[in-house]
Length: 341
Image (cartoon, rainbow, N blue to C red; front, side, top):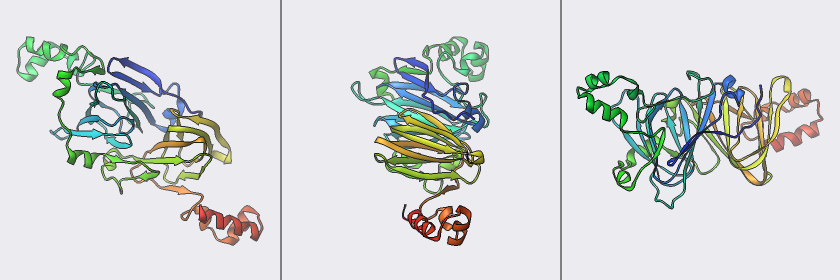
């Protein structure tokens, strides 16, 4: 499996912003691991038209403090309007209808959101496919005028206006008059559906119950200059898809037969996959390293080879000496260091 980190490719760009993808052809590990990734960049007043997708995913806000998201979940008839800021994590369950808007003023910064998720039921393995409800590529516009008019009990002229008035594709830019019509966010919905992470943490459904709806969990690692994260692995066959959110560093992944599957430098914007049961360690560069990961379970089983819960540290001293073929003195040093990390 080729685990080489890759940067995103631009899929669409307009006045309102752009959308980037990691294509399954460019990153074959996404296909084999059944995960996907994309990145949305909205300019001030940029608006991503209502849509749903064939995959569950988590959005992580990399930049921007005045984002708005509207969501309608399957089997519901209410729109939840949510406010987004940098550091927010928002689950998007399979089939949920959503729209995204940068509510900042003309001189404010871009709203940037990276999406990581699973693609087990996706049309294109390793990629998210979106189905639009408005614009020139909308599903509604694909029906004949006669069907639309009869479905909503309106005239054919009215049906034409409904399906053809919006000439934008995927992302548009709203004027000041249109911006003032945007719905206001609900504090209750924002509190329930969004979780902010600003420090290193692993976020599961225990800490954030709404993650259960997406079947995913998240992890944020922030390393200071030249610091290292001890080797970790998933013990439940889940997969990690990792986005480098800031800084740079070195990544090593070890897999089958104890062979080094990846040993490379990474920088902000890179994406890589850690397959099931493979072990990964990260070493920060001189400017530190920040990585956001999504794991394909809302209750992942993560094991660490260092720290108080280390599987290696749990082995008896005699077993460590025999298994590693080391002296009692070296074993004592190793065990003490494992527990201190």
